Structure formats: structure tokens, C-alpha cells
Image (tube, rainbow, N blue to C red; front, top):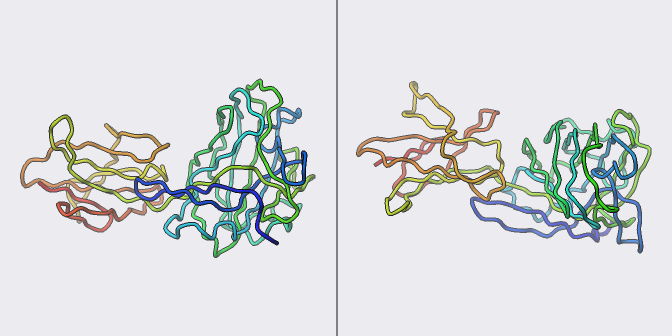
Length: 314
């Protein structure tokens, strides 16, 4: 197969900086116009065709991701654009899974379970999602670690209830269609279906955001004329949360920091302004995910670091 003709922006975030990589792209569609320009209602606009549920799978060949920074190990967001846009809409209940499959473009099985790999992970929902008109992004509830060397990427969407509120004038998602791409899809107009009733070789115009394991940075900044220590870290993956402990070792007690956290999951970063500590005191901070894996932060010259934690001394 030759290179996919559709351009996909795959965003990578490193520290507080954002770098864009351009690689080939993807999702389902019915051909419209010439062999390459296309549009689709699947999987997020099924109400327009009178459907209320859907099972949809799409595979991205690993070769699509050859230019991703190896440090960017987590998929944290999917984004798609509208070919014909309108007002915002809502899907009342959907779920998105990702897995690393050995199935490749145009070789997906019509039996959904045969495409799913052992690392199958629920990355969104099940739950409601509100889409703005004119294109949209889906921040994942749980980042997915993906290594293209291990296989291809399977996007598995379940629309349990697609009858949410929207009133648009013939909306459609922007897509491309070609028999020589690096992506393909299968679907069924029932979320409980065992086998697909439709298949295509086509793709949505959109992007996938990759993020590295985040690291803490502690530095002194001037806040309203007063020098204060500030902790910063990348907003994505958003599942990492800051914790603090007064000491390390056998007596360490880590507690989540929930107050006075600036920024939002949309990023690019989050921060906490700390009170200036008394001379001789110290505080330890770390980022941690629900898996219990602490993150080794970057350090500055005036900061002492320990494995999995950062200390700020005065």
C-alpha cells in the first residue's frame, strides 16, 4: 500500500511546549464527489440517519505514526473536523476503546471481537459528550500507551445512545476515501452486534494528540512583586495529579493537592503557586497516576530532587 493521501495532524506535547507533526490519517465514510473527497455521518452523527446506536471500528496502520517523538508514549485526545458544520450537538452515551492490534488496513475482520487486542482499554466513557459545531475534540478519560513497533492502532467506538440534542442543517464529518490508504473501518447499526454489516476504506480529517510522561518543574516566579515557588507540569495526560508530603522515607505521607491548582486539562500546562517556605524547611511533590506510578520530575539548580518526588528548600 502506498501512503495514505489524507493529511492528519498528530499533536505532541512536551513539557509546556507543543509541536505539531504531519502524518497520513483516517475513519469511515461513504464516497461523495471524486474518489478522494468524502464525508460521513459515522460514528458521531448517526441521529441524522435515524439510528440510535452503533458499533464502529477503525484501524490505523503503524506506519502512520513513524514520525512521532518516542518520548510521546500516551494517546490523550482525538479530534475531527466538520465538512458541513452546524450547531453544537450531544451524544447521550458513548464509549471509546483503543488497542494494539495485528489487523491492518483493509484486513479487518467483520467479527468485531477478532479485531480487538489483549491490551484493549476503555479510554472514554461510557458517558455523555457535548460536541461544539464546526469540529470537535474528545479528550480521553484515560491515556492509552501506544508503541507503533508492537502493532497497529484500533479505534473502537460504541454509541449506546446517539439521540442527544442537536438541530443542524445536513451536517457531515470531513473525510477522504481511497482504496490505497493506511486505514479502514467496519461498523454495524447496533451497538450489540457481533459482526459488522458495513466496511469501507476511508478516513476522517482530524488529529490524534500524543503526550509524554509528564514531569514536575519547580521554579521561583515573581507574583505581584513577591518571589514565590511555583510548580508546573503538562496538562496532558490529565490523569496525573500532584501530591505533597512533608518528608520522605518510612514516615512519608502523600496527600493530593486539590486547592489553588491553575490551568485546565485543555492545557498546555497546570500550576500551583506555593507559599514562600520558612528558612530551613522543605516540601516534597510528585505527580502520580491511579496505577501508583510516580513521575521523576525535572529539577532546577535550587531544587533538590529525589526519586518520584521533587523537594523545594529555602
